[in-house]
Amino acid sequence: MPATAADAARPLYRRLADHLAGAIRGGTLPAGARLPSVRQAAREQLVSVATVLQAYRALEDEQLVQARPKSGYFVAAAPRGMRLAEPGTSSPPEAPLAVDIASLYELMIQMLGAPGVVSLGAACPASALYPGARIRRAVSQAALRHRALLTHYPGSFGEETLRRAIARRALAMGLTLDARDIVATGGCNEAIALGLRAVTRPGDTVALESPTSFGFLQILEAQGLRALEIPTHPRHGLSVDALALALQTQPVRALLAVPTLQNPLGACMPVGERRRLAQLLARHQVPMIEDVIYNDLAERDEHRRAVKSFDTDGLVMVCGSFAKTVAPGLRVGWIEAGRYGAEVRRIKPAFGGGNTGIVEMAMADLLNQPGYEPGLRRLRRALGPRMAEARELVAAHFPRGSRVTDPAGGIMLWVEMPAAVDSIELFRRALAAGICIAPGTMFSASDRYRHCLRLSLGGDWDDSYRGAITRVGALACALAAEGARPAAPRAANDEPRAA
Image (cartoon, rainbow, N blue to C red):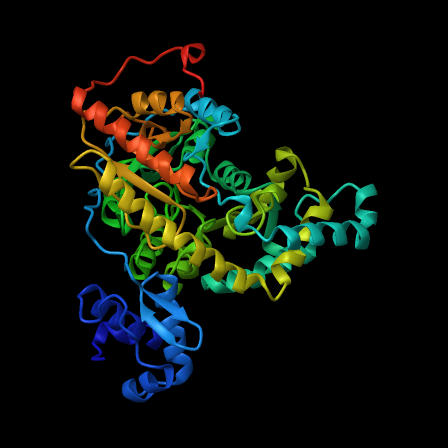
């Protein structure tokens, strides 16, 4: 395992994992091949058994190898490859834009719970992937142990026990946080809204990735902010160079970004780029709101490191929640706002005051349980195969020339189709077939991604979901064959209903 100067800063297990991953992807280790035993590999590579085991587990998380009881580790039967082309770096408008996506979002959300509709639109794992029994026990025990909280108004900033648990979990992102500086919120979007409100005023410009979360666009619209979309690579994320140019030419008041498993691309910024980003923000004294909601779903440890871990000026506000990994129904989020903490605390009561103390204590219990980390590993292992299978379905059934992302974890794929395929028309036709998708126009303040869509794969992965992806592909092929042009928007009451 030859080392280079660039390897020196990387963990030894990661260097070994990458060495083996290269052999697998290059065909040196073919599908079904047995990897050396942990002890044999330790002797051959002159490393510890623990290092080899950590490397093998990393490869398992990346769906490149499979562990077989009492037999060892084997190359996965179908390692995730590069047969499908990925979209290129985005080219958003150069000027900031006003935001208005509310009508399309409302229609999609309305369809999510409709009977007989298969949802490929909501970016949330299915209930079967959450520890349901553990969640119920934690809530019941919290109601018994802390029943006095039911007769008191909650504090505005969250239960101390929860804030300490969040601070401990933040260590995995390279963060050493003081629990007293953490403010609990009603989900991650409230945390982001608080951060933006602390540093902007209506009419200000906020830089963000392109395409970006439609939830972010909703927040900007509600606060009267303008979106300046920054070119974003589907694998490496936000272009720091493009952002540097924007900071020189535009009155950017804040950056809002998701460096890990960015929504909707699933991109993960390299660690070196995260450091560059923190340094750039420090030079221009521009605050950043960093969303870390997907960090625990990343396959690789280095992708979980927060930009805030490189922040020496207190400019980065880190926001998170546990909606994607523990329990979305508890609606527990948080923010640590750095130098803007006092302002966030000042305005927090205006956002609804405190949350439900019983719920916060239940979440603290779940975060402190020894099964939390193994549960994350199980969740990542459950999601990986479906992502690979979905990419194969896209390759087989979507129009020729389509491109699709290949994220290192998470629950979503971004599909770029030929320009003739209008994703709004595809949305209508899919809805008529009982399938709800997220058209690309939802992820930008512009109309630039009209030929794109996001597929969310967190639902109950069964034949109905596989069939839904196949059906959406067939509908897209029909649009491509028709040479379909973007259709004029219809009134909401003219939208077809689910069959």
